Image 1: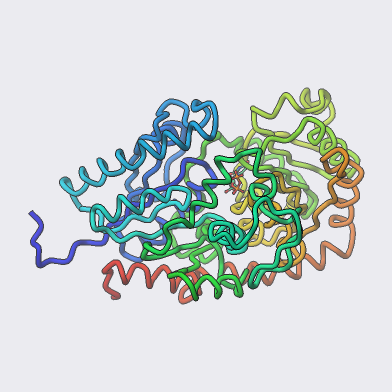
Image 2 (image 1 turned 90 degrees about the vertical axis):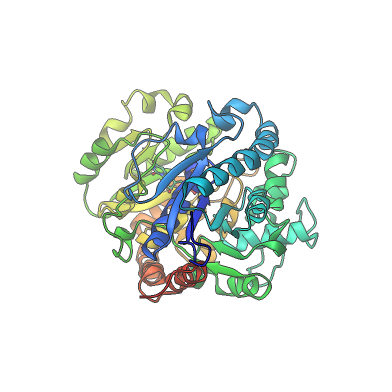
Length: 462
Ligand code: UDP
């Protein structure tokens, strides 16, 4: 039995929404927290834990799984986002409570739940067990501000005109998260993102995977109204401060990376010559967009490395799919070790969907971007990439067809790869690289926040 006069050893359960883009940052946060002396257990859905490739490079992090109601197949098996969310919201709190009960009896008992902002019901579970509750946001400050304003009713949805928010540059509808403009397409997701903020008045901590210096005014605004702390970038330590041992990769991947093929190919290319193209783990491109992209890459005459997930492969033009078009200049893979690719000296440009992890990775590694956002928070990230951080271009969308044309893609690739633009972006890149590195380095803004969090958990300095 635990001696009641003895303080409990700090033990955080870190609960992640089951997607690659949420697992990566939360797993990295676990590693940082562990280094500060907190015991950490990463929790995700069984459907996710069954499909993971690789293993965490940090064996001191325990891994547990709860049910999302679709243990075989997750959201893909649910039929619709509505069905998934409805069932997960019902089953999740029960199975998380069972896990907490089991850990309380087998020890060391949890003292805190750090939960993904997509899963606000975890706050009630934490409260039922008398645990500290911290919410973890995986999106940028500006995007969080948009959804916060929606939740408060301060922003009319659907958004149809320019929006002015404290500390955020004026956002036109095309810069807004798609889910607040186009509310009919994925109503369940719109609801989920707005509801992230529904119970924040009861939470002990609000942690955000960003760097204070990337968006200081919005971070300050949040800090005035909430116990808000920035803790990012959650990029493996080897690419930043190098203080965590053996932390060269996230460690878990839903898809199997074509590691050797990718790195061998990159190794044969001259410095700064390769255009890397990836739309992350979820975005689905229109066939028309795939064809325009293929044509734009071909006409740019640059080397290109293109990640096309298996589920997207049938949309490729035939001569790209059968390799006849790509054998000269290009390589298409189903998944790659993105961090290694971004850090490779052959890399010149990252054509990205502007997922928040990819954006933070490119900023941390100093890679100029071509921003082609697809949905959710990506358009707002694209706005910041181009206008605030000045680390990329955002090609114009052809309004009639709803795609970025091959001409526009070719033009933008050439502009960055051949011109002064690249030099300018590289100058900005140096600044952001230093800022992101310093943030997690000893005494940096994020390091201090994680230290403060650990101290409040009961970790003694020493
Ligand atoms: N990623 C990867 N290999 C790939 C493509 C992506 O390892 O071929 C990783 C990438 O480094 C990032 C994550 O997958 O950490 C994607 O997250 P992001 O937020 O950028 O996009 P999402 O997949 O959530 O849309």
